[in-house]
Image 1 (cartoon, rainbow, N blue to C red):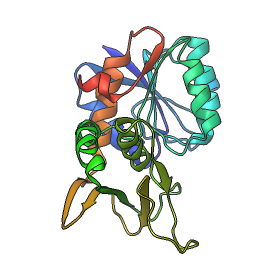
Image 2 (cartoon, rainbow, N blue to C red):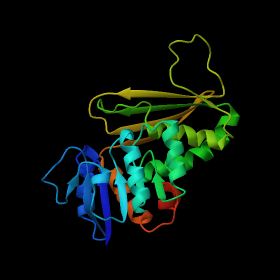
Image 3 (cartoon, one colour):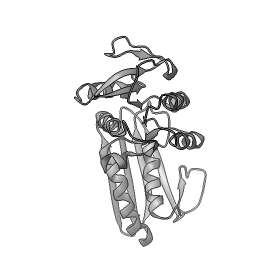
Length: 251
């Protein structure tokens, strides 16, 4: 039985992960970490990583980028692998995650769903064929009105997938309102929409002369992210130090 420590257990995603993990016969949540104490949880909840006194085999984080330092310190000190599911990390934080992965196993993904991670693979093939043929690439992402970071981590991951396939030759454009010029052929446009209760929608558009090809992923429930996080936790438990992502989980 794999014992999970769930950081951000009292948030929206924490609640969904608690439900999904509770139905998994191979995994249990041994403890939660969240400054908002919730006595109704079926496991002990600690206010911070350093306060957590319950041993675990893997930590899953759905809290926020602000909690990263404490999580990395806890995982390094206790040699607990970490699945990082939060978004909005700065470049400095991303560099720190890479550095810590030299000491303990770290799996980071901007999106935990199987469908999105398959889409990342498909986009590389599409970009290699369509971009040289003159197709412009645009990404539109939509999320609920409570999401604080923009563009989403998933939108950036999609852009990175396109750019990796094209030898990093493209730049990202987030706002055209301040510029009066035609579109640069070597740019990837990224637009963010915030409203209502949209769980998550990402559309990648390849716009060519007289034809348009679109790839679209829609999340109707947070459970797809929770299922992916649980699968990642089961995969990462017991792994040696290193940097992993969802491509390792889905094979």
